[in-house]
Image 1 (cartoon, rainbow, N blue to C red):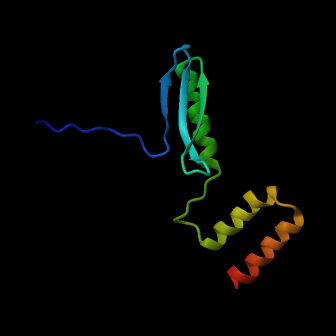
Image 2 (spheres, helix red, strand yellow):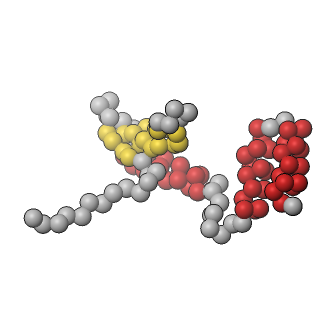
Image 3 (tube, rainbow, N blue to C red):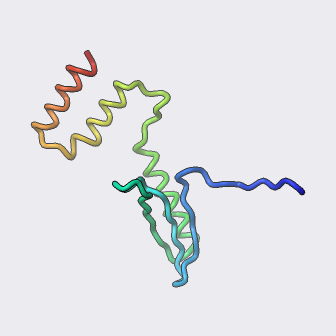
Length: 108
């Protein structure tokens, strides 16, 4: 029996397919639902070339907002998270409370 090497996609890379209606679809796991099952997101294009362009744009946008965990201290990451994620969704009073709690109990 000969050994064959199967090339697998990286985790989170997603998959492409040609749909019955003639459009191409890219589908990827975007996270998990509250019940623990995978949450899928997808987008379509009329041609394979257009779909590859959309995938490239998606990957560039996704990597633009990521932080390298290995090269980042917890303090830098926590402050980045508070400024980019929490600041836009919390009321000013709630954000101030979060920031004060962070400074009092985490930093000191």
